[in-house]
Image (tube, rainbow, N blue to C red):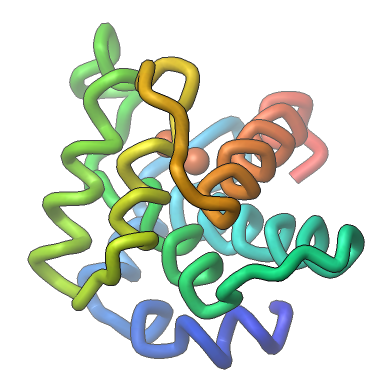
Length: 143
Ligand SMILES: [Fe+2]
Ligand SMILES: [Fe+2]
């Protein structure tokens, strides 16, 4: 695992409830825990490659919590999952961790354009992109 993910998100990664994300299938062979770590890793690579001026702690923590909805979307709520899970993830994450404004923005908008209003910070835009790249790779069985 990228050491910067542990540096900024260690309390999240160690959290008992957060670790239940390992029980939920994300796409094919990936569970939601692995998916979130992969998205955080992809975000760091994008930001570093493009030399983007971002708040790395916010970007990593937002990535780790963006899908903190705590259910298996293959079994429950399948019809509207894409639209509804950002709000639920935000509620769950806010109950468990202290979130700053940008972290809330990241979680709330990560499914853009499904969540019609576009993200308002660069960190959130990077996660929108990274989440889609990781998802495609998971669906194709590359992760
Ligand atoms: Fe999501
Ligand atoms: Fe995701």
